[in-house]
Image (spheres, one colour):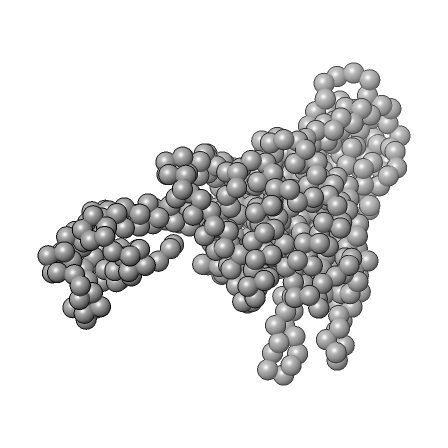
Length: 511
């Protein structure tokens, strides 16, 4: 199969999908045969793997299938569609000719998992078990042994719901940063009383940011309810339908609370000047939501029960973004999606007990990057969702789309989540702890000069901070009771306490 753009010979899954004329998003990893050396090109759009002529597979679909299973990441949606069309006798002849082959056994297992039918191949009685997903190119889940093919089915989920995460260089770098340990070192270095004050601020900041992402300013009551849910995020029962109903009811405006998964078709879009809709993302059909959410809940339960076998941020990425793509409610999906990040990180002991990393604040600081993480999924499936919209802007999806959401590549979203957590630790957590430590030291410095009321001392600190370590002449008359010499000593004390000099800015408010 030739690529029109570069006249490359496509290999593996891309070649098979073109051969079968499948209407599905193409896998992010594209392999091709070229004149030259083995090379890898990584872009935002995906990964191009170039192979020299010596890698050319045997002729026919089995040759391409063997190549894909040997060199490429698994794409479950692609394999399901391919095996629905592939001649089973062709598969049977291949597997019967080399039943102990790693790649034949992977094809054998996947075919029977997806089709629910058995090939005319005898059960394997001996030999070592082999991994379905190659752990060198995938993030793998807890293995379930399939005796018939002697395969360790190490998927993150199951037939009902299973995102996949590729083991990219970017993820490996993120693992090596040891973000959880970095956060623990920060909090161990501060006074427990300071940490207690920081915790309240961080929970409040996460709440405000999560609502702000949705363009909302919550009432004091709704904000308080959301803070309460975050405080108890570890205890949330993510495998129980009613837990989500209670959570949704707690965080949305009461008139939009629900008693079950949504029963209408929803989408994410924006209104244009002619009152039409520009659709950015079409959510799964309402009749598909129950099965998708049941599979999602089983996936998350199994990954959490595996007790750290899968990196916690990978679990959080697959679960939280998978949830928002399913969009099981009419309202509140985004806030729950971000809440689920905290639930997983707390449950798997990645975040320190009783502490939250305000990832929503990081997302809010750079909404363009957050949108790109969402669009990395929505843009890929958009051409394959066929819908109509009536005059009342009610949407109807005409084709079967459940597998687009059931099997997705969560790699871009997981990489992005690592970046948000690192940013939240370095900026929000560290800056708040540093600020409170400096603030307390500055207040002590003020009191050593003049034993003034704390509220007045706080005002003086703020005014000096706003003017780079000096009390401005314009604000001087607000403190007539202080002598010039006292103010100079207070300024010097604040500069020393905050490790700043008059030419550098002093923090002016929390965070």
